[in-house]
Image (tube, rainbow, N blue to C red; front, top):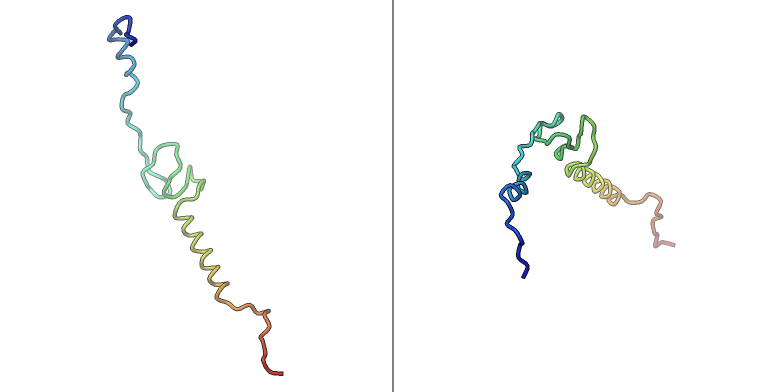
Amino acid sequence: MPVPKRKRSRARRDSRFAHKAMVMHTITACAQCAAPLLPHAACHNCGFYKGTKVMNTKIDRKVTRMQKKQAHTAVKGKKPASAPAESTQR
């Protein structure tokens, strides 16, 4: 089984962990909805970045789905006007 040839010094060992410190990130508020937000990131709540809508959110997708569903049920509920009525009398 391999064994280290020399003992690793404390400085060399500790320098490996020098970059693992905890970092406190700055949290800002979204300009549109005031939700907590990391800097330089799009808001997950409203989808805005620097005042511009850049992505669709879950709420946007839900609204779109509901509109499509309502349009589909409205079309399905109506009878087509061009269909001729069948007549059994001669």
